[in-house]
Each structure stands twice: as structure tokens, then as C-alpha cells.
Length: 250
Ligand SMILES: C[S@@+](CC[C@H](N)C(=O)[O-])C[C@H]1O[C@@H](n2cnc3c(N)ncnc32)[C@H](O)[C@@H]1O
Image (tube, rainbow, N blue to C red; front, side, top):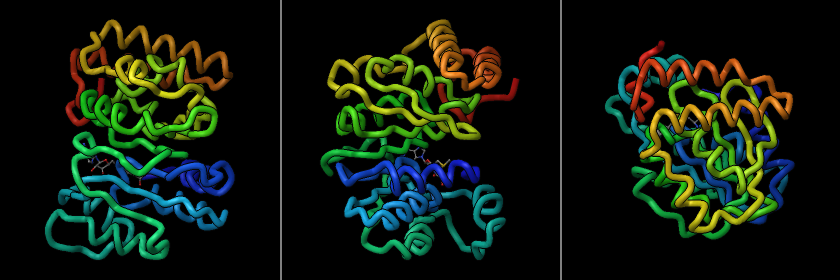
């Protein structure tokens, strides 16, 4: 599911950015593609940090065919992909812990997080709960938050959330296709978590936040204006919708 640039980014972040100041956490790891790149980087750097992949670890037939069998995984019965993820991540051994469940119902008690990758905010309300559970464990001035779907046209609440949190997170890098990396610049305290709630925002408020992101990214010279226009068109075609899988292409 990752572009080559995203794969390289994940490796680079754990190999060259991380210093062992906290754990490396991957929210929405599917069969372990993103987790494997993070683990390989951590291993190359000799880091002691643990890696944690969170997911419900299920895949329906269409996902199995399009994403797994198409990439060489042998066909298997049922929807459970936890055994497959364990098998694919076996080369990195005990370094990786997999946490199965609905991430938005889970909490984190593993100490500081140095790199947090988010790719499971597929509904505004679940993304809000994940932010509340995991962001408070980031370290100001050190931790990175990787939003793998920030620019995806069908998840405007993700960019809205990061705009609401602009006093706490500064955009550092954009990587094709949809990833934006943020540096945590202030401790995400209870005020931040209250600010980061997007599920009750009106479409007008989300449009304003997308515009604000457009200006922010333009000032960085990232040229993402058209990508964010696609997001505006996506929301205009799906008024009030807050679940990515229900979005219909404009
Ligand atoms: C696009 S895939 C992740 C791909 C992975 N990051 C990679 O690049 O290899 C998104 C994953 O998020 C998971 N997910 C979405 N919402 C979730 C939730 N509320 N609880 C648990 N898993 C969730 C799905 O099961 C799916 O595996």
C-alpha cells in the first residue's frame, strides 16, 4: 500500500531520526508493510526501541485478492490476517509487538512514543479517539507524527485535525502519495486533545481548515493546492459524510 518514497521514508525515520527516546508505534499496520520498514530502520540503527503494530488484522476477500494474493501471498481461508502479519514480520522477531483490536477502543501504556504513524483514521470519530489515546505520549521537540493519509481526498477530517493542532505540530515533510510528517513542537496536553476533535465539525468548518492547510503548505513551497482542491470537491460531493469507505468520487 506504500509508494516507494513512503517505504524509504519509514526506513529513514527509524534509521536516522529516531534516537531511542521512545517507542515506535504504527496505527493501522494491515499485514505489516509500514511496520516492516520502520523495524528495518530501527534494526539498521541499532535502536533498542520496541515497535508496536495496531490493527484489527482482518481482510475481506477483495482485499485479500487485490493486496495480498496479487503480491505473492498464497491464498488462505477466512479473514484473519494476524498469522500472516506475524509470519511476514518474523525477520524482526521480538522487536515487534502486534496489538489486535479496534484501535479507537484501545489505550497506550507503553511510555513515550518517538514515532507515531497513523493510517487508521478512516472515520472522523475513530480518528478523534485515536488522537486522544496516543498523541499525549509524544515528546515535544523530538517525536514525529506521520499521517499516511493526510492528503487522501476521502478523509478531510485528518487534515482538519492537524490544522486544529497547528500550535502543537509543525509540518516537516510531504512524501508522495498522501503522507505528511509533522514534528511535535508542544506537549499535546488535554487542551490539545479537546481541540483535536473533528467529528462534530460542520462541512463549512472543515472547508475553512482545508483552506488553512492549503495556505500553510503553499508557504512551504509544497505545491499541494490541487490535491487539497480534490479534497474540497470530495466533501462537496459527500456532504456531512465522515466515513472514508462511504465517500463517492465526485
Ligand atoms: C490502509 S491500511 C494500512 C496499511 C499500512 N499502514 C501499510 O502501509 O502497510 C489501514 C488499516 O487500518 C485498519 N483500521 C482502520 N480502522 C481501524 C480501527 N478502528 N481499529 C483497528 N484497525 C483499523 C484496517 O484494518 C487496515 O488494516
